[in-house]
Length: 183
Length: 183
Image (tube, rainbow over the protein chains, first blue to last red):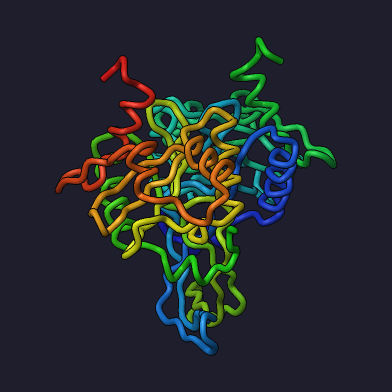
């Protein structure tokens, strides 16, 4: 059901959501709210030349499959780990967009007491949802389907408020889910 | 005092310690002890060609300055963050080997309730030390020197046991420092 082809992943990767999350993470950092970074894209370097001393130029390299998710960090002392995906046209999120080992990683983090989830933005209703790993796993285990409909996100996910600053305030959802007594 | 030249960092980067840590992290993962990964090296891609459909070949790229440290993850529910350095010949660890923004990152993590530190391996005595961020910061603030002598690591750091499996058991030190009652 879940594909391991890196290229489909790259083709479907949402750069707009990624950009919004990067800006949001910078806001969180600047305001000292949380420390969350996007990991660099893994690249396998094959050839490097040195046109000048101390100046490395990579002339041959390849994209590699990421081992984990794209984002992690710390918020209120807790380990945070997530991936972000965009759905451009459909009314369901295809599980081909998330690698099996990424789901295993999210699950492992959850079992170790971290906060893990996916952020999925649908363009059909212009809404970004936070879906916790436990609900993602539940769907995969119980439904045996290759995609998750918006209705599941509506029922089991949590809408992320979008505004100018911060762009996608996903830590507000985390507050509501994990720190309700403090909000 | 602290240099921001990426090339000195790369030149001094310890691949042996890095390799040992990667093997150790794999052991921690396989035994379900902790989930700690090395982040990919940040690379700025300038040119990509597609020799075949769905096959990207990077033909021009550059190493970028890392924004944070090399390693992070989760252990016993806590956020873990650290960097690793080798000292090949000297009896002191030059602070030129660690970027100012990396120290700031370690400090920030510490302030947010995470566990942050540096692992420094000296070849003169074949010993790897774990130095907590608070002790790193204390030295920098009080000593105003450009390097930290081994004696400071002996007094304020913690020796990391090295063996065949696991290679560098740094989480054992974390156990002793943070989870003593449970060990």
